[in-house]
Length: 259
Image (cartoon, rainbow, N blue to C red):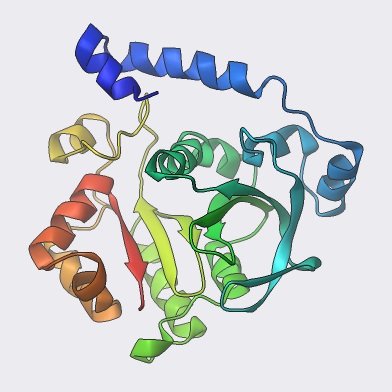
């Protein structure tokens, strides 16, 4: 259900909408339980089974180890590539993808405080995504595991990691998701009181809810660095620099893809 359309019709406040969504979200997950096999798997990689249910989708997909990455979109679930767990989350449509973003956004900081990284990555087929949970792993660890690179533009995995580590020193950067040739990052300083509406945010919203501070990039200037690092950001993803800036301001982050 699109709660923001409900909001427009009924005139509920954002806080009220969020409480309603929380109620139905928690209700839908009450019946999700881990099997004994899944509990043992979680314990084998140091994941608290009580926290692991966050990655099980509403179709109750099986929890697996984070796989070994063989090559582009070729995953080996028989061999662990990084200590952690994941669950298959079919991307049926844009709404399903929005749900993945929403779950990560609403729980990212809570899990970070417990030493966990919650993120998503893509599967073998187009439109396949996995929700993942790893403990005591840095953004660099995850990018190294995924072998994220921009090889078509002369950037190997170490180059990508070096740039992200440089940005992490300057900004409050958190990893949302990554794959072999893409990554999704946010510059979130402080969690807002209610949900992050990806499709309708703007500068006023971010300032009001303290998502921007002195450690947030100045996006108009930052765009030049993004374009240099990932030229496809304006040749394959966004139409031009102006659109890139608008998108970074809208999501308070950036999606990068090296075609």
